[in-house]
Image 1 (cartoon, rainbow, N blue to C red):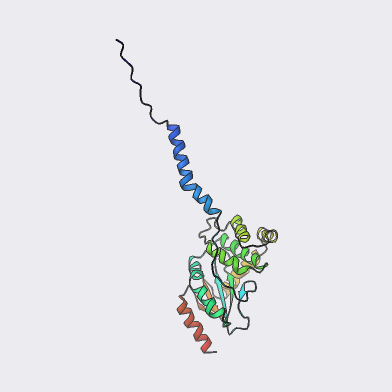
Image 2: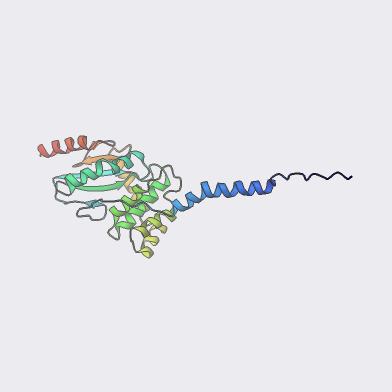
Length: 225
């Protein structure tokens, strides 16, 4: 009587396994990044009283506050998320202070300068501060591509800029010289890092400060005028 032959169990084809691993990698790692790259975080509840290009507030206010900042600077990002909003509500909105933003050139690299120039381009359409806010809401550090030209244009589209003129301004580097001059002016005035805050022409807060500390300093200036 002939012995029946046992069928050998086949293992998983190595090519199939490689394909499964690749699909898993795409689904778990790459796909979320592609999805997130198409989303833009938007600010909520930010106010810009009497905004005029990169300045807001009453130009005749008793306090003139000038901020040198860098869109890639983590301390500047923390200032945006903390002290700045309270300062605007208590001092700028109430007419006690005007507030001007100046970039610090390419302090942390080319994406710092590119982001600042794009913000000035948005200012041509009266939306400097809206663009300033969306840059920080989508904060990117270390010239990692977060402020690539494509993303800078995407931010402009998201906040409702007229894109033909905005894109031309960004692509042509219209404000590159101004951004470079900001850095020259800052260094001349004694800025060595960001954020640096001047009050009535004096470097008063060389770094991020809690709101209560800034409030104390501002109130002291007001009391001695």
